[in-house]
Every structure is written in structure tokens, then in C-alpha cells.
Image 1 (spheres, rainbow, N blue to C red):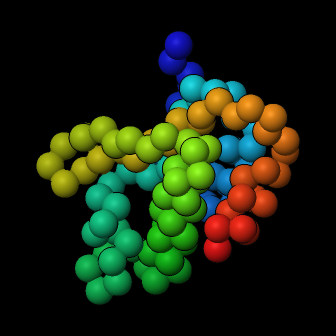
Image 2 (image 1 turned 60 degrees about the vertical axis):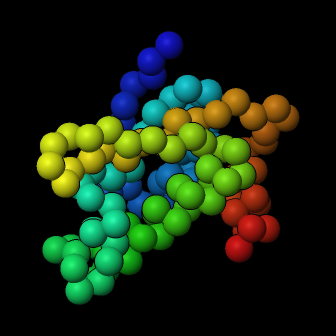
Amino acid sequence: MRAAVLTSASAVSEITLIAWVDVAEPGARLLYHHGFLVVDTTPNVSLLGKEACEGLRATADAAYRLSELGRVHLYQERLGPDRFAYFAIARPQKGAVPSASVKQLAAAA
């Protein structure tokens, strides 16, 4: 079953990602960035402004932590040379309660 893809012209914020994972049905996908993540999050290389670069880094870090906690599966699709779409897929959670990801992220930090 393929879930709808949420898209945005800009990166999804860390808060939006965390909130989404709490309400997403298993298998739902979220496009949290499109571009070249390693370049877009590297100061002095990224074409993004400082604030946007830091925000994207926070989102990418949160996505990684959620993956490590088993809340999402991360994958990327190649769009072209040096261009990718970065997705998070919600994983099934037994006994999950709202705000569980917030508690897990806080404990992991």
C-alpha cells in the first residue's frame, strides 16, 4: 500500500517531522527534504542561508534519531545529478501513544 506523499517547497521543520510521526499511519511517507542533504547541511558549502541550513540539520538529525528508535524507515530517491528526495516512512508501533516520539527523542538526547 502506497501512502500519500506530503511535499513542500522547503525542508520540513524538525517539529513538523516529530509531530507527523506521532500521528502517521504505518506506511505513510513524508518527504522531508529534496536536494543534496550532505551539501545542504554543510556550512560554507550550502547555498542555503545560515538559519535554513541549521534548521535542515536539525530536521535531518531528528529523522536519524527517529530511525534509530525504530519509529521511521529512511530512504532516498535519486532525482538527477546531485539531487535526491529524502523520505521518512512511518513504522508500526505497538502500544504507541501520542507524543511517544517526543519522549523517545528527549531520552535519546
